[in-house]
Amino acid sequence: MARRTKAEAAATREALLDAAEDIFLERGVARTSLEQIARQAGMTRGAVYWHFRNKADLFRAMLDRVRMPFQELIDEIDDPALDDAPLEAIRLACRQGLTRLEQPRYRRVHAILIHHCEVFGEIDPLAMQNEIASESCGALIEYFTVACEYRLLRPDITPELAARLLQSSLGGLFHDWLRNHEHFSIRERGMELVDTLLKLLARER
Amino acid sequence: MARRTKAEAAATREALLDAAEDIFLERGVARTSLEQIARQAGMTRGAVYWHFRNKADLFRAMLDRVRMPFQELIDEIDDPALDDAPLEAIRLACRQGLTRLEQPRYRRVHAILIHHCEVFGEIDPLAMQNEIASESCGALIEYFTVACEYRLLRPDITPELAARLLQSSLGGLFHDWLRNHEHFSIRERGMELVDTLLKLLARER
DNA sequence: CCACATCCATACAGAGTTGAATGTAAAAAA
DNA sequence: TTTTTTACATTCAACTCTGTATGGATGTGG
Image 1 (cartoon, rainbow over the protein chains, first blue to last red):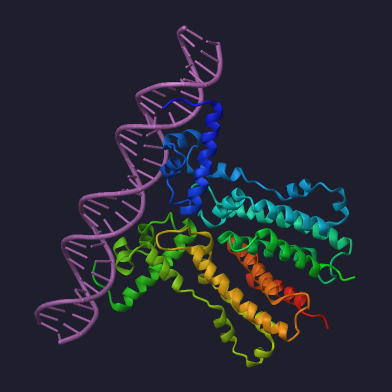
Image 2: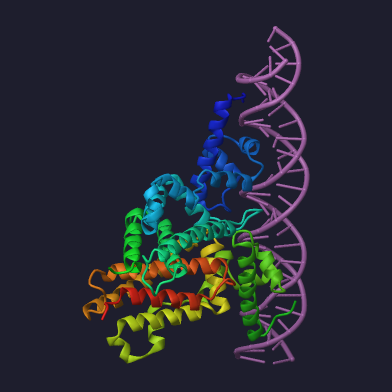
């Protein structure tokens, strides 16, 4: 086989990651060999070992394609009016995140991370999930705290409790949806949850 | 090695299942060999293959030790007054389930099922999770429907929405707790969620 | 007390996977 | 153009795990 152009090489790298997503999702991470990934991409294991040190390295690269920090979601909305409307900011951030999750790549990679991989090598998916969860929960608490200071919350609800409620609800819904995404739309049902929860948590007026 | 007494044989079977829980939880299902399980139990693979057909069979046996259907939780409470107080029935059933989850064996096996195993052989953990989820959600909807007929719910909340909200919240909390159970008590925080949600969902009076 | 079934250890063959070594043709650098 | 590097394919040795076959000692039923 001949050497490829730089662009072609980058393309095979992406093809390998695509193939990994496919087979990881189908058979689970542990039970797929690098040979299967290579063949799915029309390559051999030589290509895999050229682009990645081993399976853990490939896995990390796969995850790197779908990072999504919470603050970034807020920034994307980019509406200065949201500084004075924390509950609306939460609502829009959730909408932004839920919408992005509907992109096939995001859904598939998260499904792999949560449902189709165990601890292996230097990779600890549970630690990654913990990072994501605690980061998003921390951001939620901040916004709910502002909402509390603005007297937007019911007086018997603390910001921490509100944040935990919302985060648990979305987390549970997220897990259910990842198990069978064809049954419902995560964006629709997620926003249904968010809207009702925010309505219930908000001070009556 | 000599043949053991019937009771001794049953004990080694349990010891093998205990050992499997230990190592499955530590290294994940896929990466633990039957040899490791046997050695952890002080046996060899011969014992494993005598008591179980293969790893999938052993896995099933491990799960069989912790079945917990929703209706059974209600029955355990056994209070006829609950027929007329569906919201209180839900509350107590949740408390019962959350309490049981704090038993180490239940926690560990569910952690394995949800976070430490992929699809393998004839075993599909996602299908099992789906069964559990849909069963409990169905039961919740029934009780919330009764509550709705009794005018116990806010008029803008449907039974389905209430059930989904509660189930998502508990599911999300459950996942978080399984990832790091030493950070908080599932029973306490779970009941906190349940109580606030039921309070928010109930009709004001 | 005898024969047999049971409970487990040991040994073995086979398959699958990994990582590294080596080969190689073309792209890129000189 | 020549040289070097790149981007893979191919091959090989080592390891691990599985399933099964076999053996042996001892409970257990008759």
